[in-house]
Every structure is written in C-alpha cells, then in structure tokens.
Image (cartoon, rainbow over all chains, first blue to last red; front, side, top):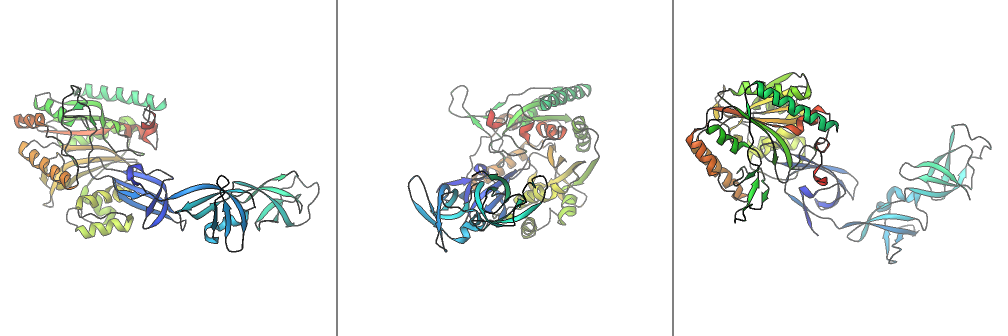
Length: 189
Length: 310
C-alpha cells in the first residue's frame, strides 16, 4: 500500500493508524509564521466507528489502508452471516452482524448496498438511501384521514419499525429514507 | 467581488497612510538566488532564468532585499508583495499569499506595535488592544513558564490537550504546538493581542535582550486577532557575525532532518557588514487581514482564484 504524507490527507482518504483502518474526516493545517507546522487530523476508526483526533508534525506520513467501497447486491441471511454479491463479477462475500450493524433492518433481497471491504473482508454495509418495504403490521388505516398530522408505528418486512401517517394500511409498500429512518411516501402498486 | 473590493480599498488606505507618514513604497524582485535558511520555511525552487545550473527561488518574504535597501540608506520603506511558501495549504494558508512588509529606522518595537494596531484597525475597525509577553501568555493559558519549563513538562502539557502522534525532544516543537493549539485560541478574539519577547531559540532575525526577570529573550512580537496570526515584528538583528551563527544553526538543523541546504545570501551578508541602521520591521499577512474584514473563514474566499483554480 502507498503511504500518504499529511499534506495529502483529504477527507475520505483511508489510512492505517494504530493498526486500525481509518477514514480521514478533517485535516487542519496549523503553522505559526515562524516555527514548526502541524496537522490536526480527525479520523473515523472504521472498525469501531469512533472518531479520533490526532496531532501530527507536518510531513509525517501514514500507510494507506486497503479499504474500498463496492456496490453489491444483498442475497440473503443465513442467521449468522449476511451474504452479498458483486453483480459485475458474481463474487460473493459474507458479512457478520458487527459489520452489517444497523443496516440489517433495511436489507431487502436484491437491493444494491455499499459494502466497504478491508483487505477483502466486509467492514461495514451502507444500505441504499431509499428502500421500498412492505408493512407487515400496523393499526388499521383511517380512510380519508390525510390531513391530520398524526402518526402510528408500522412494522416492516425487514424488521424495522417506522412512524407512518394514520391513513397507511397493513400490506402497503412504503418508501423510507434509511439515513433518517423516516417515512417518505407510499408506493403505488 | 466583495472581497476584491475590500482588498482594493485596503491597499488604497494603506498607501495613503504610509505616504502621510513618509514611508516610501518600494518594489524588490520576487525571484531570489538564495532562499531563507529557516528549517520551517520551504522555498519554492524555480528554473534558472538564464539556464544556469543553480535554481532560483520564489521569495518567501521580501526581508533580505528590503534590508539591503535599508543598508544602502533608503530610510523607512514598505512593500505590498506576493510571497511563496511550499507545503503551506489550509484554511488560513495559501502557498502564494500577499504580505505587507515595512521597516522603520530608529523606531522602538513598542511604537511599531502601535502602528501595526493602527494598520489592523484600517481593515477591521476599532478594536481594543491587549499586550502580553510570551511568558505571561503561557502562564495565563497553561500555567507554565515557557522559558524554564522542562521538556517533560511541555510534552505533558501538550498531551493533556490533545492526542499526539509524534515524539520530539525539541523544546521549541512543543512550545510552538502549545502556542498554536492552546495559548492562541485562548486570546480574546475581539481584541488585537500582541505577544512579545519570544524564547531566544525562536529569535529568527531578532535581537536578543535580557528581560525584567533576567531571562534572555528574542525582541520580536506577533499580533493576533479573531483567532488569526496577523503579523510578525522584529527589533532587527544587525550583527553580521551573529547572522552567520544563526544560519549555521539552521543548516545543522536542516542537515539533521535531511532537508536541502540552501546557499547563504552573500548580498545580505555584505549589506549587514556594511551596516544596517538600527530599525524595527514587521510583516503583515494581508489575506488574513481581509479574512477578518470580510468575516471569511477560509483564505480561499478572499483571493481571486484559490490554488485549485489557478
């Protein structure tokens, strides 16, 4: 892997720090007119999700991390692992619960997710920004009640629970923003 | 466009002020045959315009050329010019930036600070002025005397405020880190803050004097406002022998860290041997001053075209 000097640190660059793969979030260059220059760097540890702040002397470098984002199709879960496939070369990977994390509640078979691979193994899974999922359980819909602002919980086919407007019924398919976990619209079938 | 108009207005106001005070505007070459030896300043090398074998450099400051004019009897002079420093890029740094540099013979460092405050006010309006020494700034912000604190105490102090990813046995590295990351951010952002009497080891080309506590200090100041370092002023070193000793120290430090060894500016050396008048000089970062005047958080907002668009 190439190594990167502090002046090449850009937001999104993946580097190794303390043996952990990290993504650079922010790089602040600090230098007195006379004197040593420093870089105050914010990084996200891709294993734990925690944000680190480290101060470097300018010009120091870090090893790049073999971390790549791949668009992959979700195949199925065998109860222990979630299986994904690269639709371009049919290569399959299996991700454990830790890597999938909260994304699990949005995963519908055949949806295309972003799977982050570290040394070829899944590190994290990002679901599509919008998913269309069926409501498997909610209170009966109130016909005509489209103007009121009220909401009720609805259980989706993947296990997620979202708040939906009162007029939505069981069996309907809705569009959800996975970043906020909010109901967006009803999907006409 | 707002930033360009502010820049034009500021330059006009500066030129009027210096003309009224009898400080002559000068222009010196941007190309230099010998760059600064300061190990923390990275001069950008360019091709030799006459195809000779040694490179030329874009100036990192007009200091050397202006001191040659002073030695030749120019009297008080100022210059608004571009300066270039490699690897300096960030919210407050652009490798190409605009400097206001001026020198006044026979003026005390304290009066120069008053004049710097007046120049800053031309851009940002009326502001209170605070004066402190490097020592008092450290004592107030972190409770350490920067001149006497041990290397371990400085390292511990820095580590308490941030996670550090390097090791260093240079006191100045720790002092500079604590200064920029802890002490400076503690200044009143609404006031103009002057810090004077730096550690002797950070003298650059300033005279050394003994302060009231018997400590040897460098007679230089820095001015801060709104979280930005705006100016660097000096009671200028005039002793050519001492200049050579400091260049040798820079070279040793550069050698130790595997940096290039720039040639010595012999023209500056002969000018200082011939005699530089007693004088004080200061460099003001005009882009930073315009950041303050236009409430910009990035230097890119006040230049016509940032580095990625030139």
